[in-house]
Length: 129
Image (cartoon, rainbow, N blue to C red):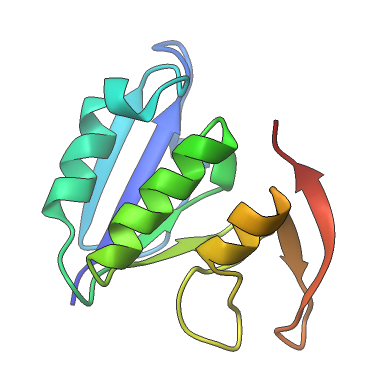
């Protein structure tokens, strides 16, 4: 099992260092707009690289996807490969309990749940359009 990091900022002038992912085995970095997942080579390389049992770590959801459809597609693709995804800034994982808000939650409601200290998912904290 590998821990894979993904970092993205929107432009060359921005700094990736603020997205501290902790200890990871490999990091994919990008300085591009997040408008389209398909137009981001490092994201596509990370998805291709990830193997069953790996864990992907991203600082926050908006670093991975800018719209709900891309978020659903990326999470589904990785979860179908047996890869979990963790967001370090204020949301949830897409795999194992107790911190679990899976893709079905994203599809059904179109928003992200806050993970309470006890591991339960609570009220939505941000919407996607």
